[in-house]
Image (cartoon, rainbow, N blue to C red; front, side, top):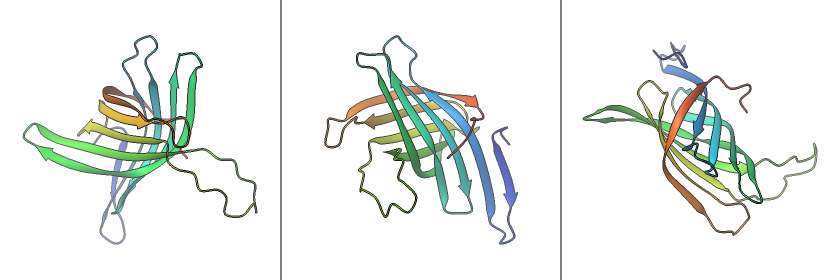
Length: 155
């Protein structure tokens, strides 16, 4: 059992899996984009993932996008071992006033596929993002994903 994964059997007999972690995705080269994921996961089934993502890049103008993310995860067994695939969709954080009604429909601006080893730690990720509604999508593929430990908070 990994330090980030807590397995338990619920009253229904289904396995419950709770995971909390922070991953940093990127090459760390000067000017390259850096994606940080703070995630909390729960499986009872179905599997679900929620959290926050922050995408930054030291360019002019600088890129700094904060999203709420949600999605799912599943395991894949290969000849090389077991992999964990986390699929996420991100939406801009909107501060909507209480009792403000339903609010606007906001399209997603981030898609992430995170592939981790069976220990749920390091792996690789591919993602795409846009900085404006209807704008051009930018893609990053096969970026290293490094587990940093526990996040400060998970949304």
